[in-house]
Image (cartoon, rainbow, N blue to C red):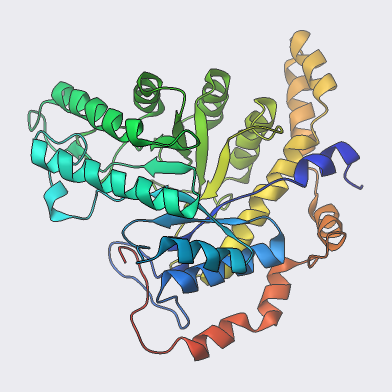
Length: 388
């Protein structure tokens, strides 16, 4: 088959942001495996991210993490990214590594600690002003390990006050995006554990606040596509962090564990208008590559997202709607499954070739010699990794 024009038209503007930290060394709690050619600076991370976009046409922006990617001149970093065909995207804050945050950051009972965390976020907004970034993404490790350890209600009040101070500093074209995670590193309660808590906080803040959904941040068996549908219905789904998990927050290549889940999520994104013109829904990866090469890992990831978007766009919406209205249970399911089982890889290869991209980005990148070249050039210095 060949992709219908209506599908091709929806694929053309598809953009998936890649994270700078995906190009550094990362791993499990037990071992981080370094690789030759790993970036030593944020500029080298951006250069690697540019390879993903050059071979796929799908990744025009790169997210930064502060302070991991902190530089003296962010305006110059912006120009560096533009020279590599990229723009600087989401600015991610970090309130989970400083010793002061042992018992919380924005939700801490300690006013001095809260002030420190707020000031960090205000610094991140200063970075946004210089880079042209529009989204400030906040993920908090705040929580407790034992019943009675802290006052959960007071923590929510402190969190709301902290977020308000940060939100009020945003520019008119900037957003605050609040991520949630149901556990880890806090094992008794987490201050932003689920989409409902994130939603409650962002609604209280205002129209320029939204929820970030990380696909790995849910309990096993959670119907993530329902959350997607609900947040889109409410107009508060700001962004995705795409990854894949087998057990908990594994941060594997998106679609690796459950391609059908990724398909179901993209079905709701399409149905909810997330890919429509004018939508401000941001699609981003949040992954680490411990045993696989990092750039190919990111290439494979954006291709997996594109493939499931294409399959979701193939659904015969008229047939699906008719079956649903008639309570034709198996008929409706069959319409969905027909789209999921459609192999679109050859059609996407043709789509790429028609746009001057390699039909097989993975093979083309492997043949480019880029990994060999950076392994020879990037000798000395300190390789970037999780936390640096």
